[in-house]
Amino acid sequence: MVANPVAAGFSSGLSVADFAACLSMGLEPVGLVQGFCAMQAGGFAMGLTQMGQPMGGQGGYVENYQCPHGMVGGEHRMWGQNYEQTWVEQSWSGGFTAALDRMRDEATRLGAHGVVGVLDTETALVGAGVVEFHLRGTAVRVVDATSTNAPWTTYLAGQRLVKLFESGFAPVSVVAVTASVRVYAYCITEYLMGGGGVNVWSSNSSSVEINQIVRAQSLSRDLARSMARTQLHGDDLHAAQLDVVDREHERGDLEIVSTLRGNRVRRFRSFESLPIPQPTVRLT
Figure 1 (spheres, one colour):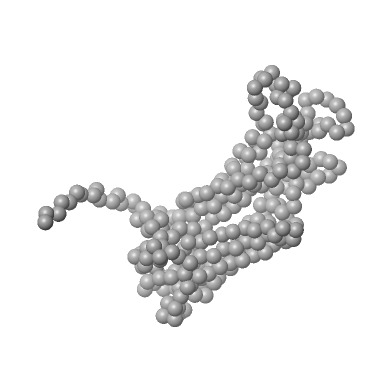
Figure 2: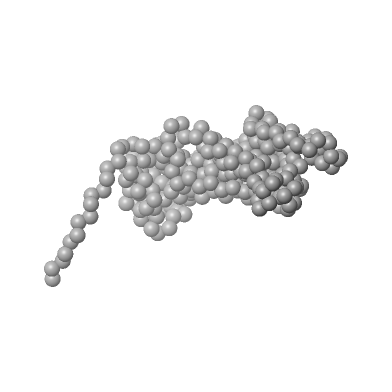
């Protein structure tokens, strides 16, 4: 049994309003906790190539694009490919999970039941090939409850967390996934991404859609959502945020990375609607 650390003082990363909201729910802050992981970015290397042609696959999504022009010249890209960089996704997941587990370990040593107001950052050190994952939050205990070996975690704090409980949901854990799709452009994509005139490839003189890029953008988002669903195990994802970053290479090549974060929550009771406010008049 872990002694109550509140008696010896505590640290908190909460604002005054969020701190008050936690106390109103019977949550006592016990300490500011963090988890950190630094990974050498060899696993984050860009798409591999061999003899000028992409090497997709690795068990993920692959889609090929064939040049419609026939042999034009040695510099003409006869084919292209969109492919999921599964090794990038696995490296990212390993770094994030290690930092999350270390934050949970700190919370467990404090006798906490959960961690609220989680913040996470991912930083690439310039020129070092290193990616740093840093998670921190405020560990809390439920008043008069016993300790637990598996603290829950949530990005939420304050009134947002209060409203979650009022709606009949409880936090389980933070969820964060990333999906990486590499675009190795074929001739048409390379030409259009370079600002080439659309009338060469299309009878429509006003605009033309760059299908290979559109497909890669759509699949990157779909893959991130699919990965998040596998971590929910039937629970819901609340307050989800999807960030998409395009990293440009040469000759129309791209890497499209979609990162999805949110709160895994579980319903513990039926929703009870709040009573309708009644107008009051004070007679003085």
